[in-house]
Length: 333
Ligand code: TRP
Image (cartoon, rainbow, N blue to C red; front, side, top):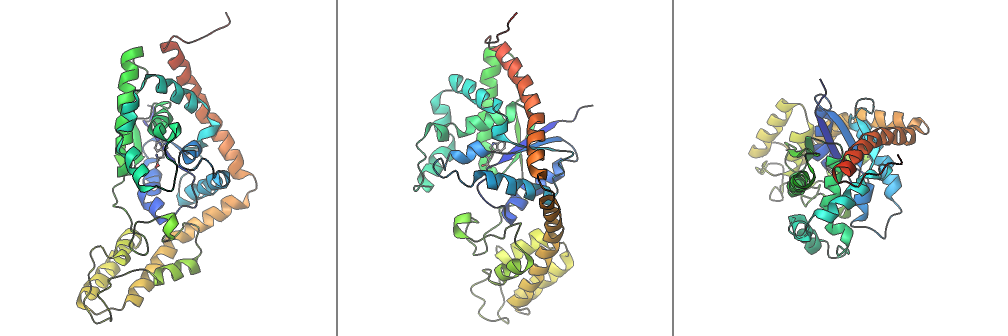
């Protein structure tokens, strides 16, 4: 029996942090048990918002691949590849662009939202409008059934299904309609309780060393009303406890800290020291795996090329069917 297929991607825009772990990577790791998984670095998608600033993309791609493996993605079981090393994604994107009305793309909510939010970026390009169409090509070229994504990506998957329906109506059943698989965990707040974001510098990176983690946690935002340790505090929505819930496997310890916090019987320092310990205990095996990967010269590069070739073989086959279905297939004889 062949296993159902999962495809997901991440834009290589910098270092990965705890938000990526909770929001994506833990899910990616778990899915390896039941699905055939393809995970890729969406380097072309990184260009849709930063076309002039491309100098960091390649380094981010390899840095992210190392973090994925550190987090538990097994490169023997899952195919870890680079989007631009499978140029068939671009061919399929172009063919889709011929049959998809522009208003379908204009009404994807992220299109206007991001234009309004990221006013410092030029998001008036053709490529940015086509972002979810390229994403559709990424997914359906592998006939993926399931796409693990965050809540914000659900409208993109809706568009993907519409594109598949239109294509299949016009040219016959070639593609599978992909379904989103939402990450169960709610969004992790930043260390300062704002939205976690690279530009705010309010995240713990997966590659931070133990001392950096300690410093960051000890400066975390907690309940501002709690001016002294004997003042009762609020646990709900308090970032320190959101993090305990996400990263401290010792539930009894967390429950005890919460109870004492509510009564004003524990200091922030103790709560934070226990959080430092929990996060570092979780990151330690990841640090070891990352170090092991980086210690093998050329390992990531070879992996990226070999796996991208594997993905490409699948993508090529699909494109053969697509050209056939669209009656733009050529043969010498
Ligand atoms: N849009 C996704 C994000 O920003 C990244 C992405 C690109 C993706 N192509 C994909 C995710 C295909 C899932 C499947 O997170």
